[in-house]
Length: 510
Image (cartoon, rainbow, N blue to C red; front, side):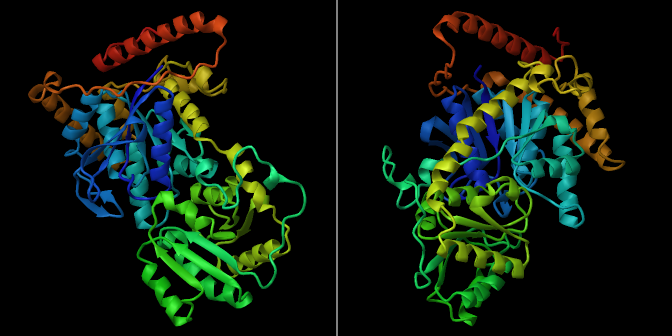
């Protein structure tokens, strides 16, 4: 059953990053599965209006003011007229927001629920509970997710963090990890398909003490990415092994501190700074190294370490957040987020490579079997079926005992009600003062929606012509084709009828 989906986030190409890559790859695979997907983000330098990417993926670059780290200025209501026009024009059924720091995402979820659209949120980050910034962010996240249909997290640690931050029922949060296009991250010496010399048995060649070891770092140069730890560790790592070289790619406010460290220790010949690199250039940088160093202080998943392992690099990373869930132990050397432990872990990794104890030439095929964007798209599609009522709660939760209680809180179909009074009840429970403020925002948003429906009726908005849909993959045998077609047609009619009733505020008959 094809859906019309809008991915909404402040962070998207041409800016490089894990969230940006996740949105693009997921959208592309959903299109391959027969769905219609558009992306809504803010305007970037040289990119405004509507752009088409590969596979017919349409991107709306909304010209909103950016204040910090590519995040737009929060206005709450001014985005609604543009958002409504896009939703009607593209006949969107599901709004899928990404990243808790994205203002466009939070506003799109609010406006989407007001318009009677199903909403999904994917969290890619971890946040604390003590500092002022985290407290404010968590309150805004609670506001956004109080009326959400379902939440997706990229790791189990991320799920635990999100459930606590937004006071969510764990049943409404699924874990779907990131993935990697392994074919785009092949080792430098990877042979062409069909040859097996690279996987031949036998110990790998040792790296002699005279051979240089190159350590690669590709990251945004911010505090939370562990740049301060990196700056402190580099001179000490080089003091332990004089044949170590560093290649560092990325940009950020900590870049000046990194440059000062290099000048202070006269390491210009041993540390190469590349500055920002495009995502398609990441593989070319990685294959120049032997070790990938990832000293992050907090990380929900860490897609870059999967890309590094796929390129045949031995990964040294901090044991924080969801990173321990990402790769098996034989591909990684873990360290505490401390200077001494990072230096020690890097030393162990160098020694293991020189002794030939690590079979990095096997990493690529192993990563290829572990992660697939097609699998991520299938699991996300199942979430869409669950929130739309196509799957019953028992089917969606696969017989989880609490599914009955969960259904009781959402109605017989197990999906969120669009009734204004029900929405206000959910927002009112967000706090003594915050709950009243959130209810006021929802009421104003609803009144604005009514005004727009009167003075900018849907009949005046032209519907966009759809890119030709792809056929959904058929895994059934020929004898079952007729029965499956009838069943899918019935489910499609059932879903369409339910959506019409919900938008009109009529009770369902499920």
